[in-house]
Picture 1 (cartoon, rainbow over the protein chains, first blue to last red):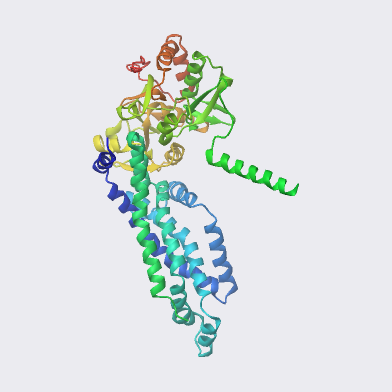
Picture 2 (spheres, rainbow over the protein chains, first blue to last red):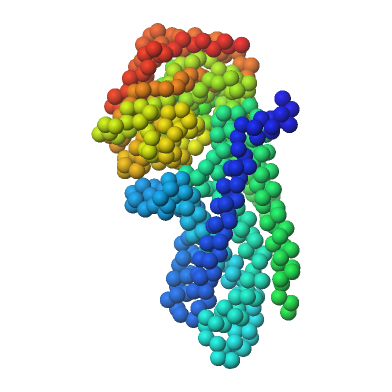
Length: 227
Length: 275
């Protein structure tokens, strides 16, 4: 059997595109929520209130150092099984939501640190100037610091997005049928074409991830703050 | 001297890196030993219990190795997860695999099989107090658990109960936790795997099998393609059944689950061709 035949057999027997589509959906929703949570945590970490700084720092250190798989398993075995928490009335959607929640919580820590690295690119004089014209902490952050910080943080944010894309395969641990689950099925039932299976998923992720890298590089140049 | 020390250190570092990347370093060699692939995480079948190994597959493998002329201390147990089995055989990382390895035509393209030594069937495991699930048709609206990479749960949805809710987790242990907590109504896979789960440790006496098998899985001994050992192993399987060891192994490893093997299909005759 030629490689072409092997690939066409896999694509005929399995909905490969559908499986990757689940990963893309997970990536999208988790990216949105991770960005929101991450921005709030970053705000806390640069705030003048010591207790908020402590809280933000604790969040980053605890979440960043917990393996994602453990968060996923915890969602299913602790939250869903033992504590009877559900995030949707639809049975399948519930697990998808759990996966999005855990991915968001986990990656928010990395988004926070990326934004904080962006904040460091904003000269101190900007904040001082803002305060001197009478802006408080929140208006300073919203109008002066964050717009510049995010433009400086596009590259590390892009890295976090790429890591998130690949980490969506961990959602398998929360009973979400995405690409890695399909790969396991293929290996179980079509082990004679194992090379084609491997290439399908390796290339699949390359195809998804490379444009993300190209776009962030382009965007980081376009929106760089000229100083 | 100093320079020499550095060279030694470098060589050592390289050796460590080499070891890490090869996973199985050094030990073994060409002396009289046999490497057998089993599952390490399936109680009742292939299970790493501290430093020892237990289960039906382990007992069968030990018996077969004995017939091939290897004493138990000449056996090197190797973990062979489902996804790696074909590769481990074709790369000669193991000499044979006894790990709930179903004989299928697709697998026969890349490996040889001797056996079957057991005929399993898909079944359901439910809480002992459960009175409304008797078979796969009763699963509409129920939560059903299985592990990823198997189609057992999907099969039920397709053929028997299209409104069953599927949960696919990483391991049977996670499924059984949810089953015990009542979040899942049934766990499905091959009957002997369920029996093994239900008869170990704290699970004993809490669960029962419905006893309605609805598929047939022939477990074979996986061998590298083109092996010459197949006829010998077939003969050993026959003698294992004839001298009563087979039945002893089954009952010992499923004790307490109320499991009875499907007497129509078992004990099997090793019918694989050994081409």
